[in-house]
Image 1 (cartoon, rainbow, N blue to C red):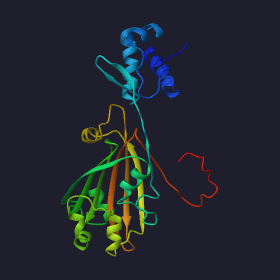
Image 2 (cartoon, one colour):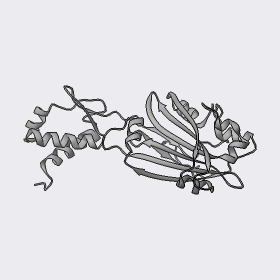
Image 3 (cartoon, rainbow, N blue to C red):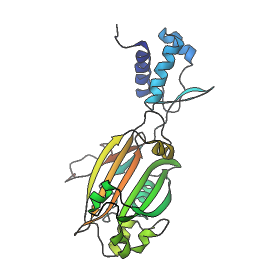
Image 4 (spheres, one colour):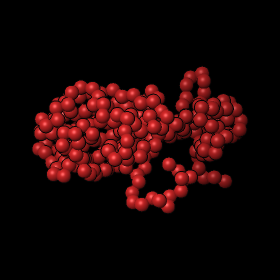
Length: 257
């Protein structure tokens, strides 16, 4: 006999059936009454089990409609090619990657001058509180919130590349624009972390209970010094990242992309 509380047994059984496709994305679960009979459990026990799956991001609930399995159409980002000017682009890297995946990109911009936070100043090797330009993008894939991207540029770089401070999109992408100004990004340092979203992140990305965010911090370098720091915040349930490192000629085309 399982030592797990009954509500966890209910959740575990339904989770397995979601994973194996018994209840595919977009399908509705049986009613609470039917689940009570199936599991020989009280209404509160069934509800607690269902609530656990909601907190894990597997189900959504709506009054009068019951519980539905969430649809997760995951977008895969190749972080090695992102912003790599050796690969052909149609506009910036985000638009190129989303369009090439057969999906529809859309983004909203905000540009402002503000004092540099300590964690950004350290990465840009400038004084804490020194002025920097923040280019903030709220990005969508097929009208679904996908990520937010906050990129900080030191003021000395903005003086040399004034379009960075202009509101709206830089059509060719900022990395390509800076290269045309003679400021080539020759390398970057990536940091990846996960945590639960802040209330503002949950609002912007429309994240349900129990869904974490993936934080991707990329500091870009010219040959002489750091030139920008970008923090991208992804919905943890709709995104996956990969890297290509070294000689991959032995990699099968049938392997997961």
